Amino acid sequence: MLKEHKKMYKAGKKWMVMALTSFAVMGSFADVAGNTVPSFMQTMTASADPNGTGSTVNSPAVDLPIAGGTVHFDSIEAAHVGKMMNLPQENAVMTAPDGETFDFQVRNVFVYLDDDGNLYAQMFGAGESHFYFTIHGFQWAPGNEFPSVDLRWNNSDGLGHNHDWGDRELPFTKLANGDYFKDWGLASTSYYTDAVCEIRWSSVLNHKYQNDYGDYKAPYIRFSTDAKRTADIAQHKQDITGSQDAKDLRLPDLDDAVAKAKAKIDQNDGLTNQQKTDLKKKIDTAYNNAQDNVHKDFRASNVNSDVDGGVNTIDDLGNTPGVDIPGARKTAINDLTDEATKIKQKISDDNGLTSDQKKQEDGLVDTDLTTYTNKINADKKADDINNDESAGITKIDGDYTAGNLDALKAAKKSALDQTAQTVINKINADNTLTSTEKTNQVNQVTADKNAAETKIDNDTTADQVVSDANVDLSSDYKPGDSLDKQKGGCEGESGR
Image (cartoon, rainbow, N blue to C red; front, top):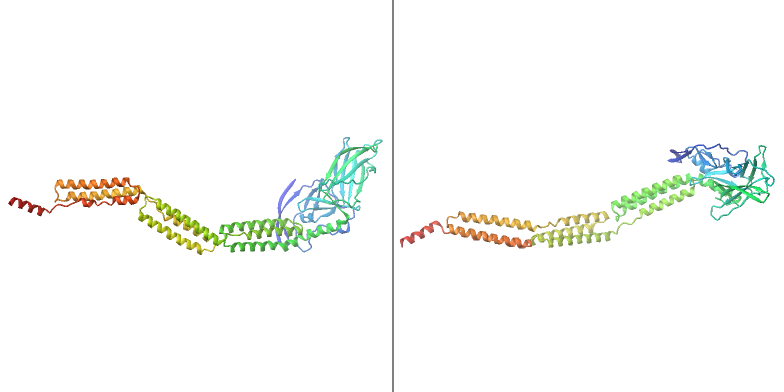
């Protein structure tokens, strides 16, 4: 059963959170008993202070599964350091058709947790590490006098190397309870590291015919040559116990890289504020990822590799190039000029605007184009260039107010109607005019107004509307002679 929980523990001066997996104990475990621990391994005992620097490591004890059982370590750190022990015995790893069973145990091996969380048993030759085999229920018969076990390994390079240990002709020792037992100490010094151990169990008939009862693989077993074992284990210990020192030494490099990268970004006028914000977020992510990787490392070499990788990523982000400011200015001014040209074309094409209105709006566009071009030329930052370009385009767009030809026509006709009515009212109120004269003048006003409005209805430009609406209807009103003059004229005629 797996249970995951998080635990705070202190490594050096830093508090860390580690996700830990606890394994329910699946079987009994015996530490090294009766086996001589090689001298070069005697200093490898798990310790709460593996690097000997006074750093406190308080991660919880763990029981890790291996070989059908579990092995106990005082902490995750201790598991990475490793220790010598006997592995749990694996019972009935293979069963023959006639009921024979086969038990297997490995003793006096160096057990450790690698960087990827895999638990391994490192075996050594020169008689130090041993395989123990027990066969239950062996069926003795003439011609089938003894059982046989072949050991072979396949190198992890995939080349299919294999090597048999022992001799089938050598019988197992028969125990008092009827079982057969064999203690096989490794003597060869030519094994490859990271090989996979495979066990083939068989019985031999008449020394000629082999009954294979199956293969059993123990992928947790690794081998080490006598020539390399001392150096390998010493380097392993040095890497593990030196990892905290490496963390204390190298983690500040990540902080320095972040500070420098963010300073470069702040000073890069070619980046917009949004680009700067996005890059800083990416730097924070790269920093956190690198820190997470480093805190998981249990080897000094891996610490250095993860810090260097994080620093390189952060440096690359800090060196992100911004836009070329002179080039950005030129592009922005070109965009602004294109917008002004587009708006002036709209003004020119608008039949609802008079020539005077078009001239006025063109002037506004030219003024704003000059104003914002000067602003952009003075800008030194990408954001300022972008902001002034955007503001300039908005202002130039606002300089154009579309005309409305139909509304202009309606307004001019309404004005003509009002003017005509004013003139007609004057005519009708003029007592110097006869009824006939009034009728004739009113008809003339109405005719001139209608003629102008007909022209307006047919006009296609604002200038035509304004021109055709410019009719002097007041000239159609011609006041009569004064009444006194008219009376005097009448008297003269009667005296004659």
